[in-house]
Image (cartoon, rainbow, N blue to C red; front, side):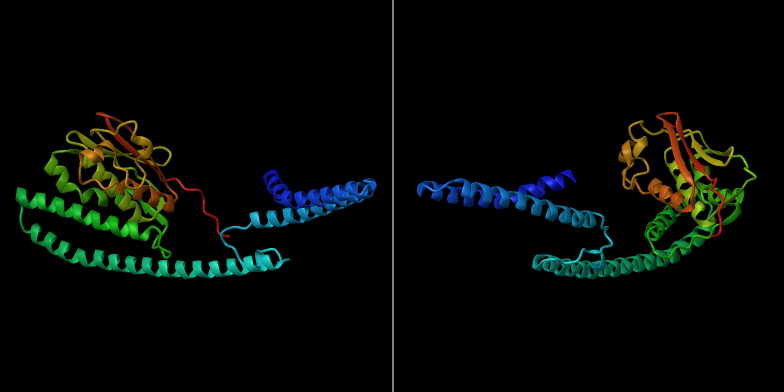
Amino acid sequence: MRDFWKLYLRAQLPALGVFALCCAVFGTAFWLYGLPLGAVGYPALVSGAAWLVWALLRGARAAGKHRTLAALTAELTEDMLPDAETVVDADYRRIIALLRDARRTQDAAAARRFADMVDYYTLWAHQIKTPIAAMRLTLQNEDTQLSRRLTAELGRVERYVEMVLAYLRLDAEATDYVLREYDLDTIVRGAVKKFSGEFIERRLALDFRPTNARVLTDEKWLAFVLEQLISNALKYTPEGRVSIFWEAPAVLCVADTGIGIAPEDLPRVFEQGYTGCNGRADKHASGLGLYLCRRVCQNLGHAISIASEPGQGTTVRLDLSRKKLTVE
């Protein structure tokens, strides 16, 4: 409120200046005509005191209006505004109403455009799955090094399509999360199975230790997160192994013996579009995988963290514990 009073008193300076000028004019006229200056000084002093009281009372009222306006949020409604006391206040209320209506129109148009875009890309993602499935069926009839490589690349295309769908659904009003208890080993095995060809092609060992755990989660979305983590582990592990194991009390770990992550990149690996040193070396990196993992984990109520040392590998931890849900 200190800033308010500074601005308010500064706004009263012109009126105070005009009052002082009038007093000076009257005093000069009385002095020129030889009249007693007290006849001007005393009324001027009384008038100044009365004006000061009026200005303070008016300032207190303006301060109350200022507090009301400052407390308004983005959800501004006309009923929340203070009552109009002057013509200028009424003008401002009309301007605010016009701006609010214009904003609602713009928001509605933006929402329609976003919905149309989501519908289009969702339709595209589902349509592209048909030729992908046809190619996969064709490749299953062959067992050559070329077919295995093409199958692995086809799996990468499928993951990119799933990333598109996940990105579109993150901020959608309607979500398809189904939270229930699932057998964690079943979800992990399903995710690992999609990369079996890549493990064989790249001669990487898989160390999966059954967790024997049941977790409260969404099977499809948790599988999406695991597939992204395994894909990253394969991408940045030229040799060695990928390990999936359980840490008490409820943490699933995906570790690799790959190239690791630079210390300066670690705080930003979950940012949207951030690729870091490894991503700049790999021209195909999008910087969306870990960002999507973090967003999905937030929606599921899980925590995700990452630890890494250059040349030593990376470990991603999924904390699958959840607070007990209560029905209100």
